[in-house]
Image 1 (cartoon, rainbow, N blue to C red):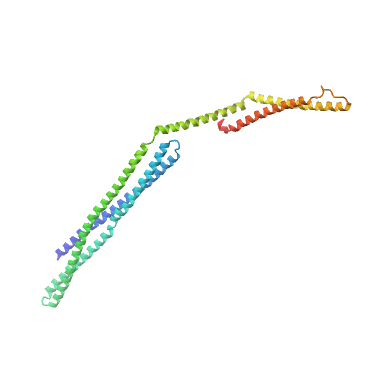
Image 2 (image 1 turned 45 degrees about the vertical axis):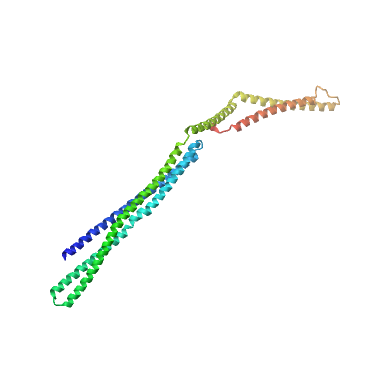
Amino acid sequence: MALDLRSSELEQAFIKERISNVEKHFTELSSKLSCYNKKSAHVRDSGDDLAKSILNFASKENLNSSLRSSLMHFADILIAIQEYRDAQIQRIDVKVVLEFANYNPICKRIKNDLATCFEIRKKEIKKKNQLEKTRGKNSTNWQAIAQAERDYSQAKREATQTVTDLSKKIDNFERQKIEDIKHVFLELIKIEMVFHAKAIELYTTAYNTIKNIKVDEDLKEFQSHFRSYSSTMNHTDNSATDLRDIMMNPSTSRHADMILTEQNQTIDDVENSTNISSKSYTDSKTSNHTPDSSSIISPTKKIQKLSKTDQINKQSASFSSIGSSVRSKFDFGDHCL
């Protein structure tokens, strides 16, 4: 009796230890694989950020055509790689992490079956003890002995059936555990191989794309643009310098003052001549004498003087307009002077 009970307890302890070992380590594997997937997701997000940064730089690169085109293509390839990485993460979650996580309820169910089987075994042992006790005390009471034998037989049948079922469950559990470990890790390896095969293919394309950057052509394009830009800036600086010299040269200022003085003197002469002519004409009319040709300025001379005045005015206006146009054309602010 003690041997049977001890044997039953040892079997239960052995099986329970196996189940607890699977439950503990499968939970740890599920947790570590989930952490692995989270880090892969972080790499995926970082790859997307890197691709966006490359695209932003390429969109601002206007002078190097081959560099711009290659970088934009490279960024597209990086985005495609991160899409494959995302698919890898999803597959690992479903086909690997969840498979290990699903073993928690399986292990708990096997533990419950083991406890039930052990209780039935204890019940069988108890009925066997009662039968032996009845036979020892009431060896002539066949009715009590027969009832004890029936109870023991029923408990034994239940225990035998339970042990048989539990043995099958334990065997199935062990087989399923081995097969699942094999299947899950094969799936993990296959998922990783598919991703890395695609990644190698895309990275090969990316390598050739970056390798095709034409350094000399891009440099020539930059130098051509830089020369045209420099010539434009030099022309602008020279024009601004000429304007500053015109404004700061004292001889030019004196020349402008002389022109204005001559213009004012001419206008005064014309006004004086006109006044003298008017006065002579009035005096001659009053005295009823024919006016002297010397005292009256002929219209032709007046027209000539006025024409000369107009020419001077036009020249002054032309000079002023030229200065204004130069100032307006090259007015770049104080920083250009």
